[in-house]
Length: 136
Image 1 (cartoon, rainbow, N blue to C red):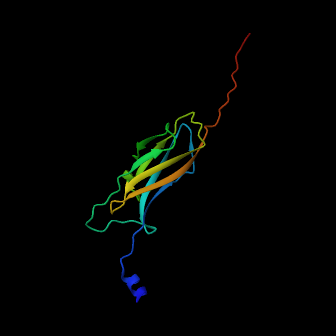
Image 2 (cartoon, helix red, strand yellow):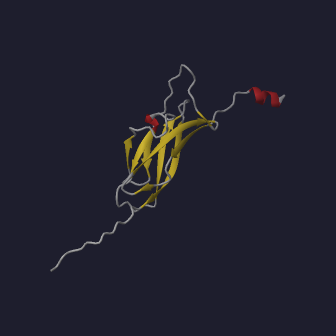
Image 3 (cartoon, rainbow, N blue to C red):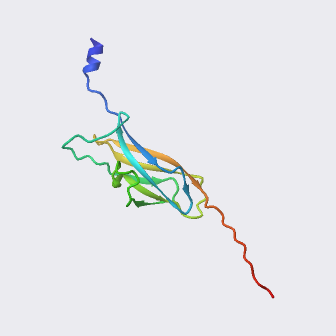
């Protein structure tokens, strides 16, 4: 009887916020684009017909010099709305070896959701030149 009641009881939905980046690192002085998606019980969440749930994301960085710019080019091939994509700007000369980006929002039930991604930061390659000067 207990097993039947457990089967008939409403299931608890587990929501999570997953952040992805198509490139594995960001070179200091350049940018990288990331995206965040809400998952329900491990499956990409699709709002039921007639509902208007759209996650409103707040982005933060473990590195105070890193800034964010709204994405204007769709890096997902149309699978993730631009409102769920952000451009991460790592300044030239940043000496960090990685940066942790955190996105926060609420799930469809109004509960807080947080997702993080750690992105390696690599230094810009050194460019050497040889200058020749005529002296006589």
